[in-house]
Amino acid sequence: MSEPTAPGAAASGATIELENLTKRYPGSPEPAVDSVSMEIKAGETVIFVGPSGCGKSTTLKMINRLIEPTGGRIRINGEDVTDIDPVKLRRKVGYAIQSSGLFPHMTVAQNIALVPKMIGWGKARIRSRVEEMLDLVGLDPGEFHDRYPRQLSGGQQQRVGVARALAADPPVLLMDEPFGAVDPITRDHLQDELIRLQSELHKTIVFVTHDFDEAIKLGDRIAVLRERSHIAQFDTPEAILTNPADDFVSGFVGAGAALKRLNLTRVRDVEIADVPTVTVDDPLQDIFDKLRGGTTNELLLLDKRGRPYKWLRRGDLMRARGSLARAGTLVHDTVTRDATLRDALEAVLTDNAGRVAVTGRRGEYTGVVDMETLLNSVHEMLEADRLDAIEHQHDLEEQRAQLTHQEQEGAGPGPGGPGGAARA
Image (tube, rainbow, N blue to C red):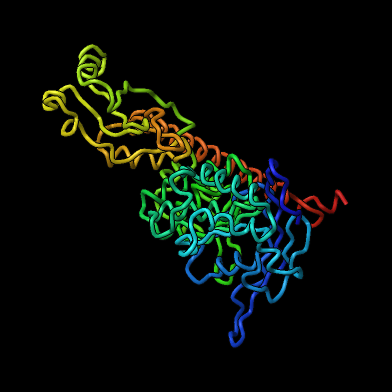
């Protein structure tokens, strides 16, 4: 593996090759992981998904040798890392786990600086990198630099955990159910954040989850694992949804495969509309005038940081009485451009308002997606699925016709059949 990159240069992903990777524990008749072989491309996000106890986390931890393999080989960028110093290896491979794993006695900055400090970076470079990492994961360096983990929400802790894993700019990032301990809304936003980060950084990410919907949303490819990490199918989310290899994989896909495909399309891929906005600092009379004079009977009220705060309608202003405190409907949920259409649809249905606000990396308003746009996308996907099914059926009928034709030709008169002797 290469050494840490110089300041200003970013390390892209590295290939990972697992060759007959095996783990046996003393006293156990069967291996926990049995001869797993796969190749992961540089810059790819690969998801390990499978039932509890199938060995997916064990396989992940053998890549950075938190668990030592019993047999087989691990190659990162072509270099066999099976026999090198495991401590040095782990300093070059980012690792993020459930509940962040932050050291409670260290500040946010000290947690993020941990690996860069271990590998000998200078103080100025570390200080700059900490600020860069906080900004990268959407946390204000001035606000969070000196906080302790206990002063953070669960989602903020996970962001710091990801920042720490990326601080030394490793080409490989291993993630073991990192978002499993947070609430569903925070989980969706953390997934969106990871998608955004990966679009900027192009690391090689290996991610363990038991949630197939999460696998579809995040993965370039998904490895569906059976017991002992035997690979049932290793393919793109689209291929697994439309062509599961067997009943075991179908069980993971579950019902509603067409709707699950909403996890494959991002908000940025559909039309993002705009709505009139006002801010809490605007004079109340200006807000009245904008509502009265506009073509819409609704405004989006933004807070002092430009984040969606309330939806205001003309009728709400009659109750304002010189203040916006009791007027309007609070914005309960938003989505980012990296959110999936499924996230957007759930947010629209939760808010029961027919649209959802789209925000940037710091929560600032950037537009809206409405129910009509989402339904049109669903109809397009269902129509595409219908056409694919027709084409697939047509191909099967052609294959059957060819087989029938070949069988009929093969059943014609041979040397022993009628007239065979004369031809001979």
